[in-house]
Image (tube, rainbow, N blue to C red; front, side, top):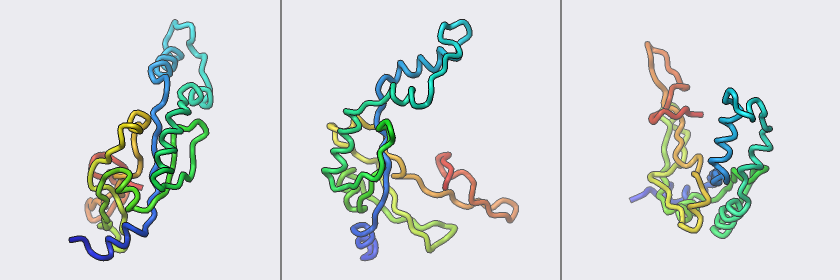
Length: 167
């Protein structure tokens, strides 16, 4: 049975998550990027700007689908990237559990026992009406790096399990 503190923490704590919207024209943008680097291609060295590339892969309808789902589920959209690819939203842990159909857990850092973080205990489940519009949910399962002791020296910048860097 969960502790009383965990239940209070889930209902009161705010957690920010980022949602990566599935881009449009994925194959076209990949082909364009390869062509500007291919010797002999007519587009060789005809680079496009960062904004031009993002405008090419923007998909406003998908962005709106994700945003509407978040807002209907009581999440607050904090920021949206200039081309709608990345949406950052905030909600209580209990709200994220409901929206993503996933159990969240509180983890305590081995390096600092006073610092607790809330992360997913499993894979999120996105409703089919939204799933095609999303590539992924960021910050849901990322844990900070565990300190590694090498020759008596503790390193907090070592790779976390799974190859992720903590931060």
